Image (cartoon, rainbow, N blue to C red):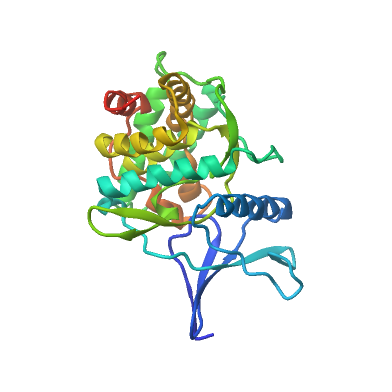
Length: 308
């Protein structure tokens, strides 16, 4: 081993880059202590890899296990993904297309996995509870002695979000419809690697499978498009238009999933609570420096470009 360094991009688990003379590995320290989560992670990675999705390998321990449990802490060591990660600001049409095509291939690879207790999203958000959470966040952010640019944006966004949630037109629940299956759960640019040229890319690595979930399949491409390209509806449309042909998805299935995801997105306070209530400074990078707007306004711009 020639060097070990902390990877700053991790938002929840701590990840270290381990360099040897010949290879690079990534050592993950999990915040959760449930080994069944890691067991499912290994299963879903293996199924994706068998379906042609480029997924790093877990390096087995001396005992032959895929992870190490030591003093209540769980660890896994992974091979490095091929290619490079691309900053969100540099993602272009070719990246969006490659990412959409890869997600379709990923879903085809996972569609036969049974329900083994995978995570599910909550799509029912009591208004009173969420207004109270935003009020607590406002108090925390407003009380900062020396707020920076991110803090200013966080305060503006949570106030606008609270105003929208209190609007009579804001839905707070949605039914889950359409085919359900295992999905990656956190498919976005921070977990993707690319190889190629300026106009022709392919996804060369998909990492971070811990958040695998059991959901309507159309939920994930919509979540990913919004997460990666919420600032650029044409790129979001390119991503979705690359995904849809691989699964022969109909507009009705996409629209039903958009309703579900829209409710989840409009109530999302994860990054704010991690940064300001739980002391997770790494979550600050997920707070956009942009005005909050309801998902429906983004979706109106995207769906008119969908080739469905």
